Length: 475
Picture 1 (cartoon, rainbow, N blue to C red):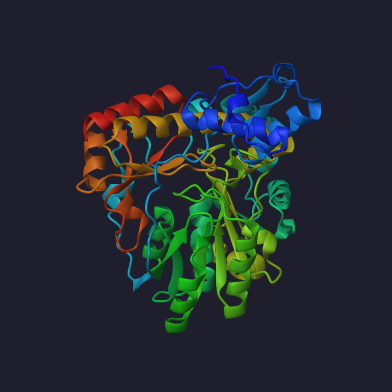
Picture 2 (spheres, helix red, strand yellow; picture 1 turned 135 degrees about the vertical axis):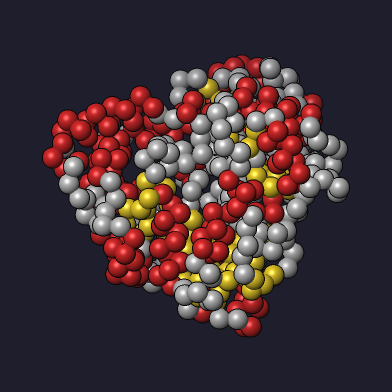
């Protein structure tokens, strides 16, 4: 789709670059320019509107800062997301609930197993978007160059080469750590379980965001730890005012938070709020467990800083993984342990002697080669396309009054259906058509969000749009 002349949208008094940018913004809002459309080149913009190079570049720089466009090397500028539309986002929780003992319906989180089932429940990227050939090469190199190491017990903390690479990833998140602070785990779930066990005992209370990832709630349930459910405010993070009031009534051992590409809302918390969260926790002796599954998948701009970047006292533990969007079969995660490193290592030794060496060696080679950056560059674009296309189809085909989030990164959509619809029933109807999704109730310790569902958009656009049409036909 081509951009239209925009002189009629000029606002007197605005700088010329901003007049141009606002014109493009209005075209996006009206649907004249849609996600994936290419904008005129800088030279074309100069010629058409008789402006300087600086003005043309300033126009696109402003649009890029807003997250509306993304530059592709040697290709130009493309619409990455339209301005916020009139569709209201899904409702957030409004009050604290708990402490409660968690009881998750495991049948709802396990989904429907079997050949031919389209997995849109677990937030795992499908094979079509994974770096399969490069991972196979890493495995071959690991076997040929390190055959003797691959069959021996690995260091219980994890392969040192891999831990060094993870420490570099942490540095890219705005934090710093020593490789000895990193503990390689079997996915992010094991890292989360170790973090909870390091700071809490059965019957203790941990604050969680509402809504929050069902895997976190499953870990709390397995460890018999109670949860206080505190609202997650889009664009702000966990409601510190409500958490402060809850901390006066209860002894809260830790808080589990997700500040970058939140699961399931998809928002990113500003740095100022991150600093407040760490300051709040430090002043009250509350440990912080940071889950950061989708931080590298932000659609526009630089990777946001992790909460760990604001931690000067070692109170933040990071639980991360490359399994969701790089190598699910390797199932590698890690914990950045903070001041609890000795306890992490003790608890890890009780779980197993060591993780498998070969996947760690292969992942170390993959990261050392720079393949992760190349993969992320392609993946972000593919996921952004899938998310936007899926979102548009949901708003077009689902019942009037449906609300959908617009994530800043990651690949999950949080969908609130109108009154009268039940997420668990929608899940069953989708399962009958061979599609696995998740009901909103599994994202809340108190089973809130009964009218919501979560859809993971980790497949190509054509797969996602067909799936939405199938689900909509059964509503």
